Image 1 (spheres, rainbow, N blue to C red):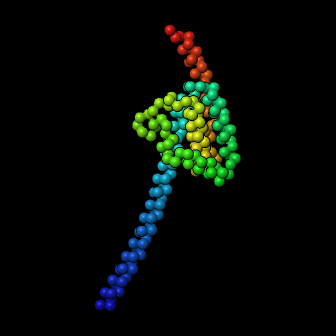
Image 2 (cartoon, rainbow, N blue to C red; image 1 turned 45 degrees about the vertical axis):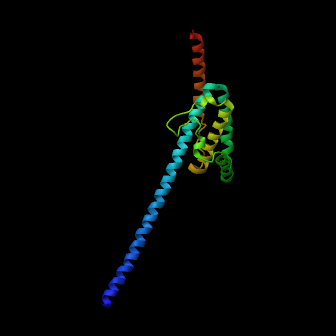
Image 3 (cartoon, rainbow, N blue to C red; image 1 turned 180 degrees about the horizontal axis):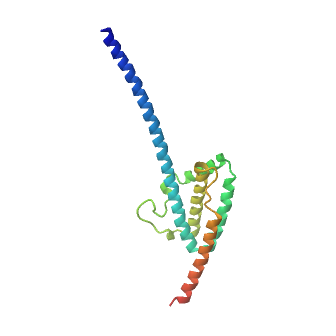
Length: 182
């Protein structure tokens, strides 16, 4: 009888120990899964913001290419300024933007999140360019704080060159359109 009680106690102790070990391994796995999900969510949001910025930049460039070049150059200066901020200062600036746009969907003026789009042409240029500036600033700050030591070079020399080439293409297109219009 004493042996039976000892076997039962030993079984209970081993059961508790193995359950605890299993529980700890499950918690570790769940924490890892949660980190992966959070990283994927942030990456998806970041890619959405890049797509959104690209769409808005196309509208802005088509509407007024010279103004867009000026805006792009102003953003290059802003990018340099952000690179020189401390993490705390950058975090404070990002908080200002996230307070202005408390929900991620607030950045979606064109309807990219939904499966239909709204025309961006209904916004006046100044309003849309200010919004574009805030998106790019959000991307730079997010990149600086969460993805890399240095911000992703959204405003690279390569991109600047491509914008200049696109501007030249647009001018040629407009000239051709004027010459061949009836």
